[in-house]
Image 1: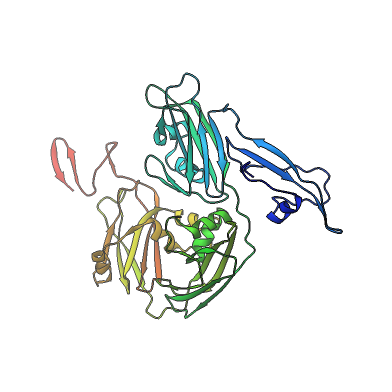
Image 2 (image 1 turned 90 degrees about the vertical axis):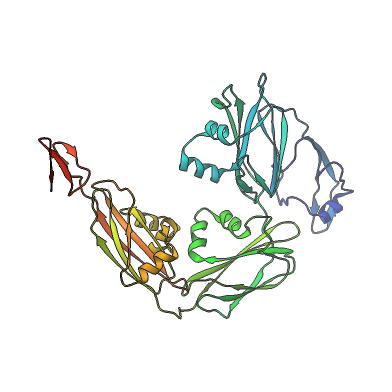
Length: 438
């Protein structure tokens, strides 16, 4: 504990609550990884015998973290939802750039747009000229307003490097440090959860925390959404439930009834709850329920392939729908929908989910046209010749009940004349300086 706090004797240490219990060991090793830099602490140790109840003398040792900086990046302190680090300029360096973000976000961004440590900090790092300690608590933003919320047991990466005359960080100059926030303990409390008045699109969810839970956060989402997030680990599920720390709309300190609306009929849902006690230990609970059968008619879809002028780079489809209030459509490489459905964690997704999440949402006017007798003709964007594709369309009714249709097609090889590609077929060609219509 900080040197400003003291313990009188061994009995007082046990009453306060020891950091660690050890039984039977002669020698133990304790790793203290949540200390702050430039701080003096006292480490207290005592032993007691249960039968008879006898306390040892209280032993103590001073721990001083006033240690000179030797690296460009030094982790100063790490808490459950906070941390700080210090940047020391290398000798002779005028200015540097630095950035911090979650490791999973860094990996995702780099896989999406390419790059490396030095290119990332060059593009997104904040520039500074002095040695400095940077403190982060709960939430922070980088120079492009990319938001980062800090949760327990979350991995972050710090990247820093000296800036050259072009304002960039060279690959040879970049430094990085990986670390995790402190992992919260498990709160020894529980919740009483019940779900009533379940309809096709609604449910009343009663949540009552046991005494000891000071506050909790909750989230109602489909089982498919929870399973998808769970593939990244239990910590990701906790972060999903908690949400942004400054948004208190899903937080309560007492028993509540949540009136969930806008649900999909005949669908598995979960209520996710994360509770916190006074020591910020966490209790996670997932509660399952299934919505009722739909009451309205299910949408229908019919898709017909249409003739296009240039079938090597275009495709068109006429779509007729009934009972639809929202529709999404798109053209995808053949097999890509099945590939997404086959990924771990996506077992509860449907083809309609993939189309909905990756296609283009139709306007109200387009949905109305699809509902008419004439139907809606949807033309693709520019396609590659001699390539296999899938046209997918998804339609949902007012209750969110959805259906999808997928049509496979292959674009043609472009026509050729005299070794050159012709722009259109039928069209015009040159023959002996005279135009002929075909």
